Image (cartoon, rainbow, N blue to C red):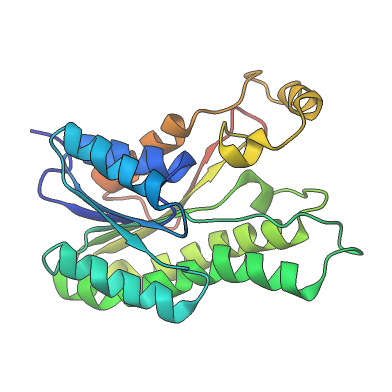
Length: 248
């Protein structure tokens, strides 16, 4: 018997990178999974196919979760597809629009904060009625090491990810009596499409600042999420840093 047999899960931004790895790992442990994607339908379908090939069940739902009404409608549809139950919510979707503060415009700030932080609130608030009725829920928000430290050119991203950490703590406090735990996983530099856009020379410089001297794998982030979902019954309001020692 797998650790998440009979459980249901929704993963935002689940078609690629860390979200894809999380969806696959949850499914591997027995969860029925819904993944949300923004625009890459082919990538989402590939995740669905991969999970079904391993004998699991997965659905994909398109939504721009930077828009609260779309995020809430997507969560409602996911709960419907999952048979009226939602046990695990992973708020993973995130974007970057990097510029120094003096060059950053309002649109760049708003888009990143709305997508990264606003979507966590919208999806969480939409999931809560079901989780409260169940008296059970595991909410895992994906933050970032750059929400804990300064990151040049990422005022919007760092603010959104730091906000996720603060939101997680407050939600954990408010929801504990309803049988719902809320935690965050904060990845460091990880091999994703987003990081692949960083010039190779800069990537090598970054590795020299990581005690374990390498980038993280998406699957290593996923294992921390699965641990919280499957085994973290007495853990709430916490953050697990998966960063190779780059921030301690």
